[in-house]
Image: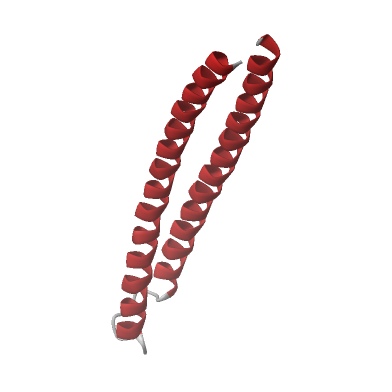
Amino acid sequence: MKKGTELFDAWAKTATDFLDIGMKMQKQFLEDWTEASETLRETSANVGGESEEAPGKGLFSLYTSVVSTMFGASKVLAGEIIKMHETWKHSLANQIEMGREIAQHWA
């Protein structure tokens, strides 16, 4: 009985560690990506110059607006992905605990 529980605990720890590492890496990637996107947006916003009469100023303003909206939406999406992963992590922890209880009763 003890060997079965030890085996299950080892598997559960490995699965949990794998999920934690994956979540941390993806969270860091999303944070870095949104930060780089924001820097790109700010840089492109400053390229147009100060003159309101510069050729293509209206088109550049439209481009800047669209890019800002896209980056804002991607930042919200990144936040929602992180929340979803936290939910998955919690669900997996609950399933592992239930599996452990079943393994103890059957072993």
